[in-house]
Image (tube, rainbow, N blue to C red; front, side):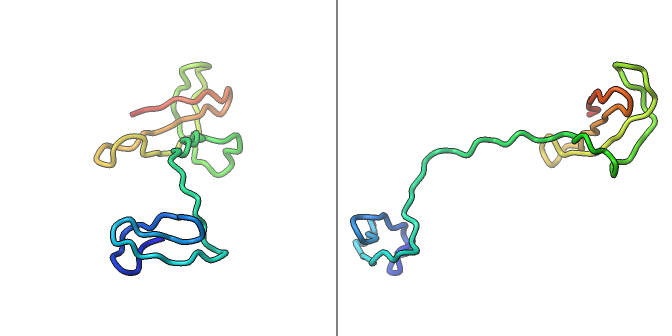
Length: 101
C-alpha cells in the first residue's frame, strides 16, 4: 500500500495503514493483503528438453554417447543477452542431452 499523501510505502499497524514518512493513516479494508515477506523465491529448475519431442526439429549430428547421427535440437539463451544462444541437443536413440555453445 502506498501513501496517498506522499507516495511512500505504508506499513500495517493494528487495523490501519501508517506512512512512516509523513504519518498519514488509512483504514484497512477486507481485501487488503498486509503480508510482508522477505523470503526469496526459489529458482525453478529449467527443463531443457522434455520427453515428448514430437514438435522439435531434428538435425544430423553425432551423439557423443552412442554414436547415433540424429538428434532433436533447440536454442536457449543460457548466458547474457549480448552472447550467442546455446544449441541443446537430445539424441533420438539414447536420449543423451548435450550442449554446443
